[in-house]
Image 1 (tube, rainbow, N blue to C red):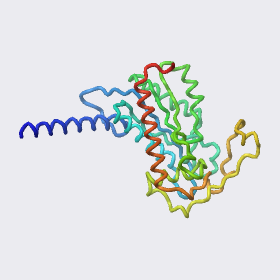
Image 2 (image 1 turned 60 degrees about the horizontal axis):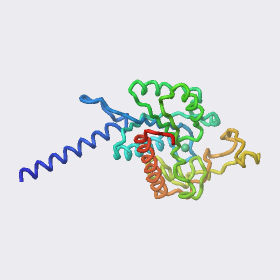
Image 3 (image 1 turned 180 degrees about the vertical axis):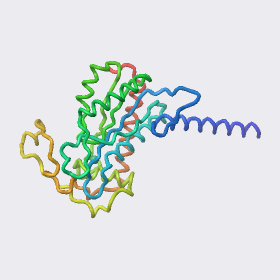
Image 4 (image 1 turned 120 degrees about the vertical axis):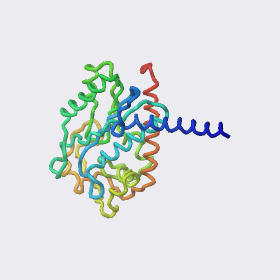
Length: 273
Ligand SMILES: [Zn+2]
């Protein structure tokens, strides 16, 4: 009997210790400085959002809320597979040059993002964290060229960009695949942060004009949109068919895939074959 109790206790301690370990590592905001050991982090995840209007029914912080939730849940699932990963605090400002005439849009230029990202890389490098995932949740952010620039400067650091909204093909789950405050973002907010979403009857229809040139429609020419010239309610995409279930499905499938990628990134020693 005594032995049985002891066994139970030791099993419990082990589980608690493991939970503490995984909690300690996977969200930096919630991590305390450890007394007795040096945390070994292999992958740092940098969630990057934006502060911008999202139709009438979703909040300005939609990209920040969603990006952080995707990053944390993906990292939690990866930590459960013993991946030493940590999610840094979310950067709340993105490139929003096309929306500055919409009140309280906060723009962070790409040239500033270069500096922010570089300071993060420099800080992490000292502690031997050499795998960075820029975890993006805003269409106006594009870190490709920045990462190319850093490739020359930090050849021993692996930096990649991941857009959570592209992990699962939107048309597999959503009827309307409009990209801003549409069915995907609305369904996800309804699932994850329902208290921040107004009833769908309050939302605009997200109808948006397109650039007239066929070169743009064919996809081989691009120019940024002045937001207020193409949409009235700031949305691009109709949120009318949004549901909690669709949000749940996308979130679970996407975070599962991202966690599997983080695991791969952790265990793979030979990146190119
Ligand atoms: Zn958004």
